[in-house]
Image 1 (cartoon, rainbow, N blue to C red):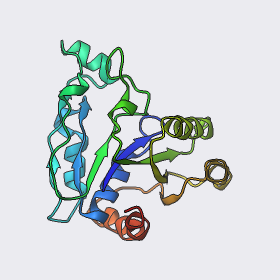
Image 2: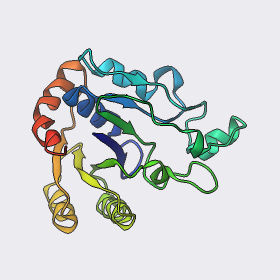
Image 3: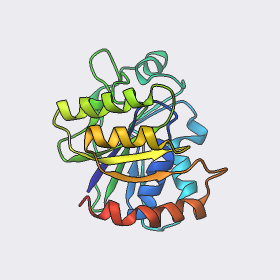
Amino acid sequence: MKLFITGISTDVGKTIASAIIVEALQADYWKPIQAGDLDNSDSHKIKSYISNDKTVIHKNRYKLNTPASPHLAAERDGITIDLKQIKEPKTNNHLVIEGAGGIFVPLNNNDCVIDLIQNDYKVIVVSRHYLGSINHTLLTIEALKNRKINIAGIIFSGDKNQSSESIILNKTGVKCIGRIEQESYFDQAVIREYADLFLENLLELQ
């Protein structure tokens, strides 16, 4: 099973959600494009959050120095992101692929994050409540459906907002895999607790 983790915006909790899914399934992890924070990248964070010994963390295809939209970060590094050069790592394990920002974050003049999503991927959308988040969530799901991309479900992250979550689920018909509370910290023990909570719903996606 290949799960592509995207968010409705940046800083909504994709990496924490990815860590939980990786730990629950003891899956491999791959972030094709990392922009900025190279010494403490999302791959580094995943490694620190998980406690199983089966997961393989695959190398980024592009490691960009500037914490910015990938197209701009690549431009500042003097390169152009080429989708043909992004080859999925080979594994017999489940694979969790983490995107960058939202699905229409540009990678170059023509392609966006959504163009990384392959036909055999199932997408999990991470949504976080803020003013405008309903709109951003509905637009993200509508765009995925418009491209006939398989949406596995949604994870809500941060403070609970029952009204927002209910209307999103009712309007989209997308399955809720779980919610991640606004924890004071995340470590291996907390990630493991969520992994146990999410496992049954994740296994149903196979």
